[in-house]
Amino acid sequence: MTPGLDQEVASCGALFADPAWQDAWSSATVERIDAEQRLTAPDRTGGEIAVPLYRTADSALWRGYEDDAGCSDLLPSPVCYLSSLYAISNPVNRVDPARLAGLLDRAKEVAAGGQATVLVVPNLEDAVTLSELRHRHPPAAEVRLDATCRTSLPASVEEFVERLGKSARSDFRRRHRRAVESGVSFVVYPADVAAGRLPEFLALTEQAAREHGNAPLYDLATLTAMAAVPGAVLLTAQHDGELLAGSLSFVHGDCLVVWAAGIDYARLKDFHSYVFLLRETLEFAIGHDCRWMDFGRGTFEFKRRHGFGLTTLYTLCYDLGVDRTGWIDDLAKMDEAIQPLLGGG
Image (tube, rainbow, N blue to C red; front, top):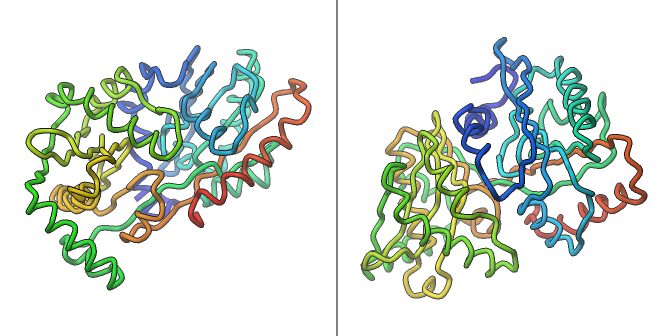
């Protein structure tokens, strides 16, 4: 475990500090990345860690957050992100706290040199890094944009199910049994064969977004790039070969990260595909010696009911000296508007 990080943060955030993940994200197209520079800083082990700085003209995920808050165009383009919004845990969480000032100063300098208006540091967890930045490097604005859902994994799925409340436990077993009786199957596609099913999976992610009143957050080019990251797997629930639900997930170290997911909501009640996929994903993770599972963002009520705790993700915004009257107040309103959507996260 990385010194100074608790086990959950160390395990669940490791994927997004991996150069392979960062290399793949460089070719993602759901964020219009105009320029990228990887800044290095000492981590808590005495080694070095790279934190990507992206200058972007547009981010589908940021627009999604603005839609959630009922607002638009809060930050004038271009914006610099110190790690992508799509990286659930920011590598900044792993930087030696004593060296955060140097990293932040370099990020501000590069961002300002690229004519950015704001430096955004997203997906910080409520730990020493966030505290250090708040008190020693206070931002112009702070927004609780999202939460992710995590749990530690026992030795078997049955042990996990026994943790649930009585009602949830009974319902979980019943729905999984009915899915099996209906002929639903669990099919895993490793990276080298996932590409053929990615268009169908993309359609499921778009359907899930529409179900929750959101615009699509992914495109085929991005999913294809991320499916090539070592440890990537497409986990699916199928009926007669057709996808009912799925997730693009990553086995990294001792954690399974569910990064992107989609569901055919039209057939959800008939096949209980969400519960089925969760149960099989737990089996898959435990079978791959994972000690943690990060179930990702969204559908908080379902995830809490099924044994996952919420970890709030904070975003700090730093003014780069460009006059933008009112944007700090706008972000405060954004924070207030999003909180009811986080399920108490």
